[in-house]
Image 1 (cartoon, protein in one colour):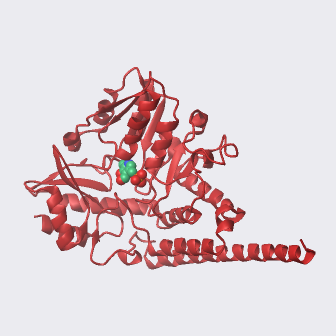
Image 2 (cartoon, rainbow, N blue to C red; image 1 turned 90 degrees about the horizontal axis):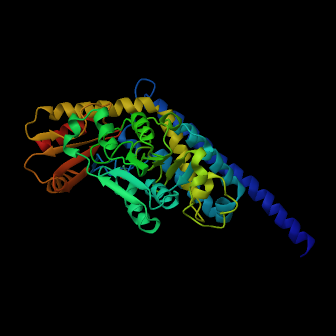
Image 3 (cartoon, rainbow, N blue to C red; image 1 turned 180 degrees about the vertical axis):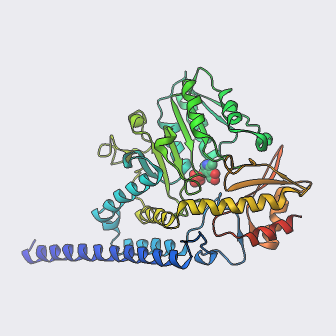
Length: 425
Ligand SMILES: Cc1ncc(COP(=O)(O)O)c(C=O)c1O
């Protein structure tokens, strides 16, 4: 190859590396600046109120379904799109090159701080379901072992165990959670319900931090204590609904695994997930994916997340979603959602046609709650309220269950609740 061609290539390499860094840091700077001005404009110093105008939601709908899937703020969406555009300018560089690999490391560190663990304990997955697939496939379980969970587990944290149990030979003990008793249960009742189903064979216990049907907030420390006293070796918690809804400190919780879906309450881009794996037991877990990285990432948490080419733009925007939450103060957000819950509860409390099916207290409950409207089919009711009034929430129907679940985030309003209550009465 001619000298001048090589020099020219070197030149292009250097020039484009400089342009890359400039373009990326300009997106980051704009985001940081816009975040500050948004926070100031929203009066965040007094109290958290970020209006729905800051989101892309269709004006014809009222969104009460953050537990199914969240919506991301316009500012974050714009930043995410800017990363995607930048990536398209040199896809090889941004997918496999150093600039965004370093950013991935920074993002992991930021996320780890946010959930209270070490960066080396946090895999950047795509959702909670993937996290549980890693566990059901990779834990060293044999014919003598049993996995215990209740019917309050979401299928994303249950189905994979049934599938892998067939090949590995371990057994599953899924028991019926007394869901109709929920409003009258105490923390200790919940712990006892699980304790009753643990046997000598139980090696894994799975439960949600916050379940998706009635929104119980599990007393995790008490659950962990009970499980350890009963000889359970692996405690896996489904944090899909908790991340971004309530503060999480994994070190304090004492669990072994904790899977998360930031695309719900953290308002991060869709298809972003996290899996906490306690460092001390990481080496007992086999990776799910077998890729070119199997030797390179051996002994690190990255072996549980890399299955080839991935969209790093969304990973970077996930880190920005954490900045967003911190800027708007996680505790303020909790207070706001608590206020919305109390308002909804009080509005329906004396309605003879409505049965509250979630925990009564905020401490044992959460930002997702469930009601039964007597004499009405929940699915029909949802269809009517959606098609005629634009309300988006979830209806659940089973043999002994006929409910509506609402899940409100900070930008929902008391007026939106008033209208729904009127429509229900
Ligand atoms: C408690 C719970 N676990 C797991 C999931 C599955 O989440 P994902 O589809 O993001 O894996 C959900 C989704 O609604 C959920 O509510």
